[in-house]
Structures are given as C-alpha cells and as structure tokens.
Image (cartoon, rainbow, N blue to C red):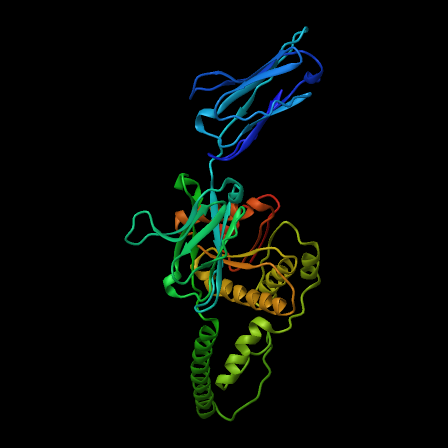
Length: 428
C-alpha cells in the first residue's frame, strides 16, 4: 500500500510505500508506478538488485535516496498538474501480492478574511486566514480591496518571496510585519472612511473563486447617539407634563373642587426626567444598571446550552443575559460575533458591541488577553444577506466552535435559525 498527502500546486509532498517485508534483506526488485490522464503512465522510480548493489532510475520531478526497508519514500519537491493521479508500489515476490493504489490530488487554495468594525480614528487589524501554510508553500500573496475603478480591485498589500524571505509592500495607511504562516495580519493604525470597503486575501496563481471577502465598516459614535436620544427625551417629557397640567386645571375648573383618588397601577410609575443630565444618566442606566436576574436566567448562564432563544417582556434582563454570556466567552479567549439580522436591531446590537469592546479594553489594561468581539450587520429582508450570513459564519466556524449573540431578532427569522455543530447562539 502507499500514501501521498494532497497539497496545493508547486508545494512539496512525498509518497510513501509500505511493504510486508524488509526489502533491504532480500534481492527483490521494486518500482513505483504512476497512472494519470494528464501524462503518460509509467514507472517514476524503478530499482534492480545487481549483486550486492542496487541500481535505481528516477524520472524528472521526483527524488529518491535509494533507502528502502519495509517502506520507502519518494520526494516530490514541487507538485505539478501532470503528477496528479494514482500511484502503486510493486516488488518481486514468490507469493502473490495485492497492490493498493493511492492518489495525489492538488488542493485548491482558499482563504477568508476577518476585520472588526470600529469607530473612526481607532486602530484596526485585518486577518487573512489560508487553508495552507504559505510559509511552507512560499506562495506570493496580496490583499485586494474590491470595487472602484479597477474591475479586479486594488492591491493594498503585495507580498513576494525573495531568497526565502517574505517582502511586503503596502499602500499608505496600512502596516504588515512580514510574518506569515496560515495567517497574515495587516494593521490599520488609524481607521478612516478611506479604509472602508470590501477586502479579499489572494494567493498568486490561484482562482479568485476560493477567496471569501470581508467588509470593513465604521460604526457610529455611540455617545453621540445617546446624547441625541437624551435631547429628544428632554424635549418630549416637559411638553407632556405641560399638557397633563393643563388638562388637570381644566378638570378642576369645570368639575368642581379638586379630589384626590387612589387608582390601582399594574407597574411602577414612570420616571420624571427634568434636566439634560438626568436624561443622559437614565439612558445609561438602561444598559449599565445592576439588574437582579431571575434564578432561571442565572441557571442558563451556568449551563450555557449550545443553542438558546430568549423571549419575554421589555426590561426582564434578556439583553443583560446576552451581554454576560458574551463577556464570559471573551474571558475564555473566544471570538464573539454580534449579529444584527435586520435594520430594527441595529441600535441594540451596536450598543452590545460597544459594551463588549469596553470589556476587552478593561481586560487588556489589566494584562489579560481576551477574545475579540465582531459586529456583523445584515438585513434578512434581502435574500442575498441570508446566504452571506451563512457563508460568513460558516467560515468563522471552520476553526472550531462558533460563538454568536443576536439581539432583537425578527420573529420569522428566529424560528428558522441554524447553527453549525459546536456553535452557540443566544438571541432575543
């Protein structure tokens, strides 16, 4: 029998033959036969025993050091298309031998990229992940920003191998440290609107079909959003109070002397906000106040089931459960994906992402290396976004488990949610 690992084009590999006896202790002749639809079939190596010596012929593209025991190894320094096909190992024996084939197939190089959405002027990192070790294959590669005037995109980073050393050139505003394995990290020291767009990591000589793109998105400044909401609340509440006061005065004037009555209420009275400072404080309290969780919610955080959907009235701690579970994942070093499935969930998901970023910054200041949060914005009302979400999350799950939270999920989407094996989805 034999074994040969499949590798990308121009990558090194080796074929190993296994024999039922030690050929170095007998006079058996042996050979390795190659059968292919791309080239002529025949022996790639053939060895004959002449007295105490062994004479071997090896064709071009293969290497053999003439060492054989109960196995032998044939090197293939740079796998080519005409070397694809089936191989079989043969030797002369007095008893019948069953020869099993093995096949060499060139792997298609693929990649995907990942970049977190951040606020303008903050630093960012874009990670290219390949299905091969580029440091071993010595393949040239590039980071391309798709779209624009160029039909094939614009090269942002170009890396080539010169005397086994990787040399990279970058466009202004990007940095790379010339270290690559199956990953390459490109840094953006100060993000701006000029950096936004769709990126793809490309290996030279491979089809673009295998390279998945990623979007670089700048998120809005959350404090500015909170201030806008606070001002709107500040304007609305005084106007409402004036209207209530006028109605009350009218009742006193036309309905006789004022009378105090007790009216049963099913919920606590609404908060009276009178100043801008109070409005900002109460808005922050909605997201950061200490909330006592129900025992069932604490149980969910301890058990952490693989898939979970949370529902309930407003103010019952659903978003807090999502936030606490995501913080626990980050502390374990996992990547957490905050998924917005429609436009109505943008505000809630962006706020969750902002709070997770604050947690990561706090832990990093304390010398801890947590995982990273990622914000993914989709609109499942558009058919292409559903397929894009499945592709993006499938790529993210290729390395193992997938950790996702989704707040304010559409009802018709949550009933058909699918998660890869080993993934965790929490949603409200």
